[in-house]
Image (cartoon, rainbow, N blue to C red):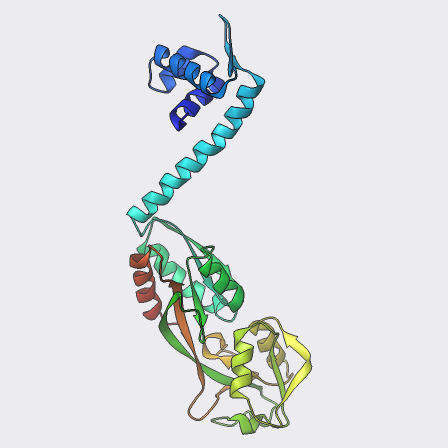
Length: 294
């Protein structure tokens, strides 16, 4: 049994006539009849009902044809995968990014990717660091943009840019007119942070590590946009990466945080065993040459 025989069976199901099925399959009628007969002998069951008017599949023949359709589709999909790797700049690619990066990075790089690789279909995936790393390692996602540290030794990690940290304060806050802020300025302030699971939360806690700094325990944001809106309306202060800054705000000021200024490192991550190195090299070039702060 092979895919050719199963395709013959599907053709017979569709056309209900040996001559038409053979013509559609670009094979002679005697050759198709012989292959179907051999298939019946191999499987030990009758697949078709033969009469002078039409050819119908038996019940078992119909069930096998249904499965055959699925197998042939899978075989075609495998061929498409192979074609994708023959041309590394075509086919599908799944690119991931962490939530504190995706809304600001994806809109910047996607137009450039689409313009440069017209045969490439890009799927964007947004998830927290640990989930995204698992998906990349397991092959569910091809590559991603994340923030260091990343400990997995099976992944390639290349620096794309350094994203500086700013202290976001409302215009009514006493820190509003400061030119530079440090962790000492956070004393007696209501510090708002993201919920557990966001790497930016851990990074913010690391650069705010000083006894006396009080994180608001009653509020944990699910996104940077929520944090930004809280500050915009006079609720507390927060650490904001430069890529997420709203420079048009009249109510919030973003003050460089740290001396020297603290930052996070954004890296492009993919499996060392991936066969799409050529495509990843081009994505890295596009990512490094993109202006994320305009």
